[in-house]
Image 1 (cartoon, rainbow, N blue to C red):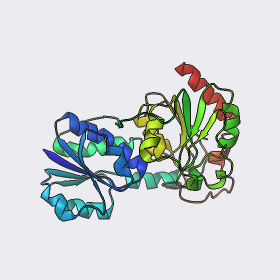
Image 2 (cartoon, rainbow, N blue to C red):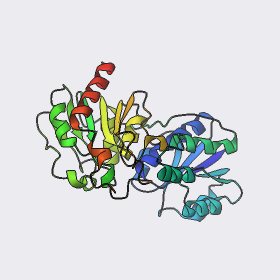
Image 3 (cartoon, helix red, strand yellow):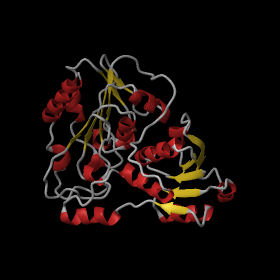
Image 4 (spheres, rainbow, N blue to C red):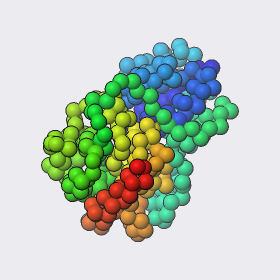
Length: 313
């Protein structure tokens, strides 16, 4: 059997499909994947994926000639829905997104769904008789550019409201620990923190904007701890089963994007009457004080992270 999975972006969403990739591979099914650049790098070393196609570099006729037994649209937009039907009009399936439940959460300020997004992708495979709870797992070959014991810190997020506001102050407290601190991500997504991230020094290695996606994956894979927001690199850390600490603010972990590493912790200000406030954290704070990402100060965060590390050691 030959199957095509379609997930064009974002980074975290593509990572979360690797549970379905693993489930298919274990059953001897040939897996192909269609995505966007640079997310194809995720699968370049992955023996479970026979072929990786990049949107804009492959035609529908080429994909149709592959003769897929099934096509799974794990993106869930009109574009990918139509694309999957054009590739295989009879045996194409789209995953269930629970969009109405998420929107209901915005109105009631209560979680109306508590299913990991990776499980939503897994559940799409029921159409071909596969029942699985497989967590995402990444495969990458090579050596990390960073040596020794280190933690990774990734302050950026796509939207400003999803960025925890005290990373610079936390860094000063983390200096008391024996780990080096490696900063990863895109500086354009730092927003108000752009000039507040420490430069490379004795215990700090600032690699923001200086790595490819594969290099970032290698660095995260070998880290002792990962600290970040609700973002793509956080999902990469969980997919490598790196102990993960994630800050959540305008979005909530119950929507399915919580870290899933065997040791993970969510830091959030619970029971704010305005949470959740937007589907992706794209809206400006209606309160004006960013309480969900400001009230969790650096001292509280450090103490919880320190205890988290103590449990590990």
